[in-house]
Image (cartoon, rainbow, N blue to C red):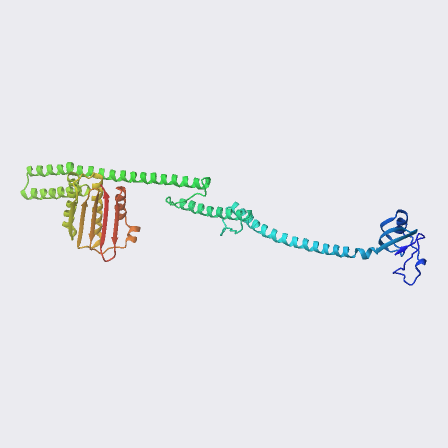
Length: 409
């Protein structure tokens, strides 16, 4: 609209179309500033008293001192801005809500495995291994931590199993440490090797003690047999000769000589049973042959004896007496329990070992029950073990027994 220099409107008012323009006074800040300065750009009240955005310019042409004003209500002008503001606020609120939701989701996704890892670590600190190890398909730091803790749990489980095996005496159990810097694993390996060495030493000492005990027994038997044969036997022989020189009836002398002969024979039998002189003088083959012959006289069953030599070599007395005692123990058991009618004793002397096979057709036995009750089999096994050999006993009730012995020369 147009305002004159008297600040009265010259054009029709859109708000007061029924009024004469000249009757409307426009003494506003915008009109005053345009009149004095030529240009006006202000936010002020218009002639109605409403807030407006007003732009004015003075028209100084051809002697006309008018002012042209262009105004818009501030509310109307701000409507798009307010709408944009509302949209921005709504968009901002939506973005904030989405961020919060995403943050909650991500925090849950991140913190859940962390909480689980914390619980696992607390259990590990108390020495408790979880049933299953954590695994994660994620390649982030949390996933890497989960996989690392899973490997640690698996390693601790293998370490615990290895420690249990060591505690159970299984020193041949294999174990691979988690790494070269695995102090616990390396310590367990060292402990296993040390315990294995100590066990071997203990077994060696036990064998030494057993061997020494058996050697002492055999030496004592040898001494006793020698005393019986050389001392008591000779004394009885001298007594027999002296009796023949004494007076008395021939019948009495014959009776006394008969008793002395029986006593001498019994002393020789006991001496031979304790330590056969033929075993000492002529070796294993002759000693076993004498054992078979003496047993066959009173045992009541047939004994088939066979001795083969692949190579003629010297067998030390310790091996000789061990083989002899095993055969003696086996034959005594057959006499006592087997009720056999035939026994086969076969010995094969090879280049590096002696193999002995003893078979009977007796009633057999339950090997497990005999292991729990008898000492004869244990004695045989102990003698074979001391010689570094092997023994196998097969028996079935009603089907006889077979004993196989291998002793290195």
